[in-house]
Image 1 (cartoon, rainbow, N blue to C red):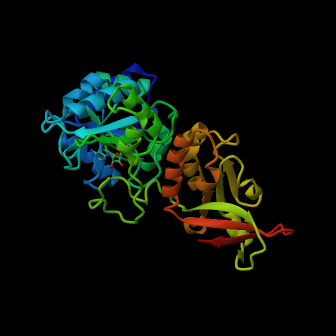
Image 2 (tube, rainbow, N blue to C red):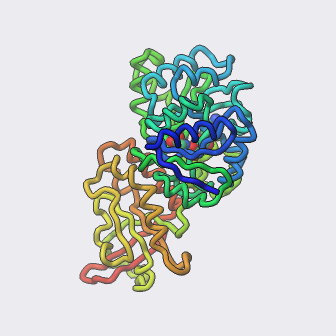
Image 3 (tube, rainbow, N blue to C red):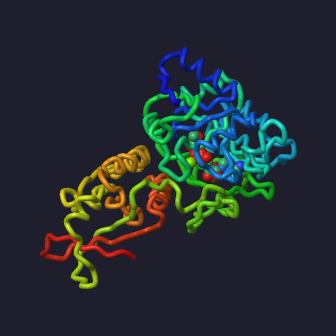
Length: 389
Ligand code: TXA
Ligand code: MG
């Protein structure tokens, strides 16, 4: 049976720490999203994470630590000096914070089920008081993926976790309120060949990483650093078995809401090749906008919300996952009749805070599984037309 406790009660935090130590699952808040935690040194405890989430075993888990010093225990003695230098520079600059560093894994202290057998471990120190005190008190490394069913939208509140896992034996959810950032950490791998791969975009951008690595003299100049720090672009495929992917978790069908989701943009045209949308379909369409670019659909569609009227990337990141879950909850009756239209991020590329916005755009792209559509307003007509691409 799932139990939710408040992070405000010290006795409940003690209980959560004790549960982690004894091999149970504890969901807890971080500054990015909620995590589903288990003792990373205990293979049976970690196995439960894969089981309850329905996650493929090939997809490695991030190990959460309360400090850089603690995290050093979990890397392989074979880690090169250069890898160590980059790791220390980045951890000291960005931890606690939304950055996961992947390094060769310690062969004994981290269960191989955590690394998906890859020999690499992702380490992260979250910037959240509840997460940090929990990690400190339990004093074990905590493996924690986002606390959602595999492939579903990540959770930014305790209720989201509860709604995906309403009835799991011995699952404790620590409610610490809404997550501040709202999208998952940036994931980077520090390679032995003196390069760095960004496997997932997040709260820390490439330019911040590059700047820091030049400042700490890891690279001689910005040009070299920009070449050596590469963003590994998403995998545009649809499959549920991730075993053949070089960057696990880069599936296109990721963060998918339960309603059919498309990225849309609006245009004004006399194009006769588009079909008129019927009223019933629009009434069962939930629109998620950004900076008012789809405003014309407000009042025409069933439900409408804007991620950030002011065009703030931070606000959009903070709200994206909870808005996707809100949209799911609008569907009454047959879910198949409903759809989500979300702003196509390509039209909002002029906004400042570009790096965070591209992390948001990445999630939108995946939520829509890459599907795009165009909504056409014919000049002089108040009817809405529609075409897919
Ligand atoms: O913000 C976050 O990172 C959240 C909070 C709870 O910390 N965690 C999270 O975990 O998003 P998860 O498992 O949902 O996503 C982690 C991503 C996955 O795509 C996984 O494949 C990748 O990081 N990853 C983790 N360890 C890895 C490793 N050793 N090698 C390659 N990729 C790894
Ligand atoms: Mg996840």
